Length: 244
Image 1: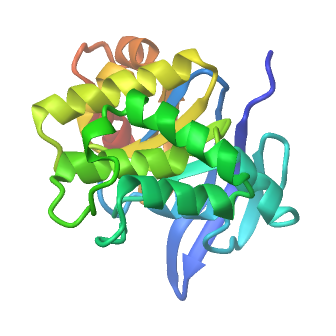
Image 2: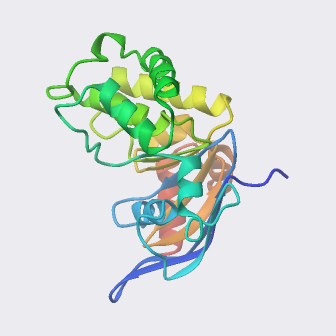
């Protein structure tokens, strides 16, 4: 079996007396979309932030491309692109300036950044907006700028936290198309979401979380067969309810 691009084993994180993640374990493969499915407070975002080295862990192990992000944070980040749950764009900067700046943070030379930005503007359909300040951009346009920022250094791993938040139907379809294209190129995609239609349409592998625990995992088809239903909402309710 191919080694996982992301491996999380017995991850534990507490905030004071609150246990946010309880012995969570899962893997994400190259060329596949893995989704952490759960409601608010299920531990999804905490897992992603620990994976990215943004917060510390109280126990367990994480590997990104075989790298321990605690021991070699820069090497792990070089492999990873991150799309946060809030875009955090600089309103006075254009898409070009955002991507050029973040490419520089990843050590890309100026000519390499320029060539990559040309690729991204085509991939994301941003040619006409490339040099406009992002102030006043729509939610969908801001999503595309943030996605380009995550992809500028050609990461092998893409981590997305609730990527469809606030998107209209047209931009949801565009996001899906982009993610499927990245999957076909061998990128390992790890996404946190509670939007069942999105999860069902995109996921190769689903990790069901509730109250900080991983309660079940498998492809959408396998999970539906296990729960004897074609409704992913019923799958989630059955699995979460069995561990309540």
